[in-house]
Structure formats: C-alpha cells, structure tokens
Image 1 (cartoon, rainbow, N blue to C red):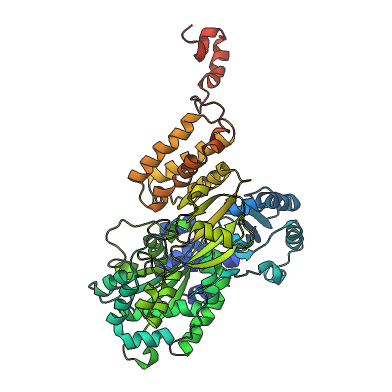
Image 2 (cartoon, helix red, strand yellow):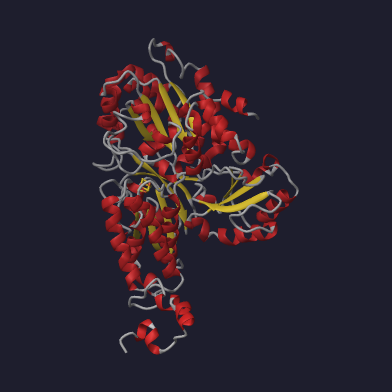
Length: 591
Ligand code: SF4
C-alpha cells in the first residue's frame, strides 16, 4: 500500500497524523526511511512533530522490527502464568535475544505492558494481533510458523480466540437493548430531560474518579461554543483491566447509542471512539456496527428524521501509550500529537478536542448512560449504595478458579467477589490496578464503592504462595516504562524507584532503600504533572505497609549501604600511585 492510499483513508489534516503513521507501520512493520518527511509534507505538519509522535508511542518505530514482531504481555498476572519462561523458550527456538531483531531481519521478540487478556493469559501480540493461552506447545508452533514465513493472517484461528468469560451479569451485561431504543427515549425526553435523568440517577464516571456524569454533560452543553465533541475513552490500559474489551465485543451498539444520546444532549455533531492499540482486532467489527447504524438512520444527518440532529462517530486507534488513558492526554493523541497530559484547568468540558467543549467518558459510563436514558434515573438509583448508584463491572484475574467479568451492584464486599470467583487462600487483592490500592485479608470486608474502595474495575488476586515484593517490583517497572517523560520528577522518580526495587531484588538493599521510597513519593505527589506520577509509589508503599517482611527478607543488611562502591572505584588510582596501604582505603581513613 503506497502513501497516497494510506492518506486517502483519513482526512488530510494534522489530526490524522497518528492514524496515518499507524497504517504505514502496519504495512511495513516500521516507518521506512523518507516516509516521515513525506507524511510531514502531506499533512502540513513540522517534521519534528512527526518524529516526536513516532518516538512517543511504543508501537511505532523508524527502525525495522522484523517481518514478525512478537510482544509478550508483561502484567504480573502474565508472569504468574509463566510468560517469562515462554518468552525465553521462543527466543531460544528463534535464536535471538529479547529486544533485538534477528540477524536475517525476520523476527523480534520483546515484552509490552498488559494487553488486556489477563483472564486468558499468558498472551502476546503478533504484529498487533492478540494471541491468548500461550503454552509451550503453542510457542513451538509459533516458532515453526515464523521459520516457515507463514503470514500472521494465515496462522490457526484458535490462536486468536478471545473469550468473553462473563461469569456474573447484571443490568448492563444482561441488557437486550435494540438499536435505536435509547435514542427514541432521548428524543422523547429532550436534551434537558436526558441530563435531568442522569442527575437523578446518580451515575458517576466509571474510570475511577467518579465525576457525576450529568454534571459533566451539562457543563459541556452550557459552554459557549459553536462546536462540541463527544469522546469515548476505550484505552483501558490499567494492567489487570479488560471489561471494556467485553463491552466493545458484546454491547458496542449500546455504547454507540450512549455516545449518540450524549451528542444529542450536549449538541455535538462528532464523536470519537479512542480504541487502545492492543484491541486492534476489534476495529473491523466495530466499523461494521457503525456502518449498520448509519444505514439504519441512527448516525449521520437528520437522525431518526429529526432536522438538525446530526451526529457521527469515528474510531481512532491508539499506539501503545498508557498515559493516553488520562483524558487530556487522550485528547492530545486524538489531535495527532504525543499523548502528554495538559495543564488543567481548563478542563475538557470547556477546552477539549481542538480547544472546543468535549465530553470524555469511558465505555462503561456511556453504556450506563444509555440504560439510564431508556429506563430512567429513579430505576438506576435504586441499585448500589447511596453514594455509588448502579452496578460496576470487575475484571477478575490472578489466583482464582474463574477469572473473567463480574457485574455487581456497588457496595459488594471484596470477600463476596473472592467467594464467587473461587479464590482460596487469598493473601492480597490489588483493587484498581497498579495505580489503585493493595489490600490484605483483614480488609476483605471492605466494599467496592466510591465511598470505600473506588475502582475502575481491575481486581487482581494473589494467594499465599505469591511474593508480594515481586508484585510491587513488576508495578514499578510498569510505571518507569510508561512515564511519558514530560516532567522531570516523574521521568527521574519512576526510574529511581525502579532502581531501588532492582537493588533490593538483587540482594543489595538496606533499610535506607525502603525509606527512600517514602521520600520519592512525597516528591512525586508534590511535583509530578499528572496522575501517573502521583500514583507511581502507591503499590510499593501499600505492599510495604502490609507485607513488609517480603521486602525485609531480601535486604542485605538493615543498615545503610551506599549504592556506589567508592573505595572500589578508587582501585585504579591506587594502582597508578603504587599505594595500597590501609590509609589509602576509605574505610581506614581515620586510622
Ligand atoms: Fe508524563 Fe509522568 Fe509527568 Fe504524567 S507525571 S506528564 S506521565 S512524566
């Protein structure tokens, strides 16, 4: 596919930059020499911006990545299922080192952040397509297919099977909504009626922060502007979260209906679904649903015959950057830029996409908003707790018999979830992913609700055979890898945290290192630019508080040990001067 064909698939404007680069990368497995210059000229953007975007997203590269790029999902749950052994086995069979391209340029193998398949891992991405349930037999087959140059599109279909694993359903997952029903209800209620029902329902954003949805929509509607936008955040990058994957597979119509209702309520004509790059395999099915909705008069101009009600939805693919889950970073990415979080205020409801008022909600929130529009705020408010209305989808993974998706009314206890999913001997649960909270067994009667344990949905279980230090170590690696590098405290702080944990893991740590984590946390809390930096120390501190022996038994000594061996570093100088007496050594300097 040549550049003109790629450009023909997207509006020829700067906002298309990331999408154009993604398409080129998909064809060539890298951005070939000279292509960045051509793209810059075609989209009328500076070359530096093109290079900046390529450098920012982990799925893009200007150096060849091999005909086959195999990226192992590296969440802690993948590790618990043996992904490290499998990756080493594959590297061995293909005669290559992790992170390097084979000498013949055929293949590369590396790790990537959680791919959202924790309920059916270990998983990897083969040229962007998810392969689940890896085992040694499957690894052997993959090595054989690569060696025989079989295109990924011709690999066995069962490799790519992704199950929904719905274990417990409620009002959302059981919903048998017919396309257009919620929209009809919205047209009957009118703009203000829709927002009033949302306010009445008590619906709060399901991304974790819990901002009231009705208030957000009203603020966008009331902002002074001639243009407004609706954005669905389907970039669920928090390790351990995969419930949006299931909603996008099973209930995409309901989601698009919720977005369209939002378009009606706030007066927007354009919506975007920001789909995480790891869910690339969902793009065509989602496009098909959008096409059907257009054909049925549920998207496009004069929706349902109503003059002036024009709304359509475009899908924008991410390219491997966790920070784009932050709403302002996501908007930057939608604009074809590096996904760096903006200064706030102003907030997206007044200055969002292209600086216009924009509603950003996640997949689950839009689905719930469609249900509220259909069945009314009072009905919805009757579920859950006083401060947390409705239900919550949980992505349950780790040490349990039945990992998958569970839908509960808010207020369910951690203990109940553990019972339902068949978890025995549970030591700890990480609620809300690495940026959430780790709780121990004495806290299992706590409730999942905004007023107690707020969560975007990840629920990772660790039984009493697990080493919680290893869990914290994996999470610190994740934050260091995903720090976007924009602000110094986070860029340096997350890599210092990673170094501290590595030092402890290698048996060189002392109590000094553990105390350093607290100091780093204070610096990051006070000076990091966005939530990633603010929460980077959370898992380590949580686990230190609850599972300190797991850390202390790895310490070399409880006293201070410098990270740098100054006396050892002076050995060449001693040799040059011919001195090796006691006074030439630092520890004897007072003798
Ligand atoms: Fe980027 Fe980290 Fe700064 Fe956020 S806190 S802007 S992720 S460097």
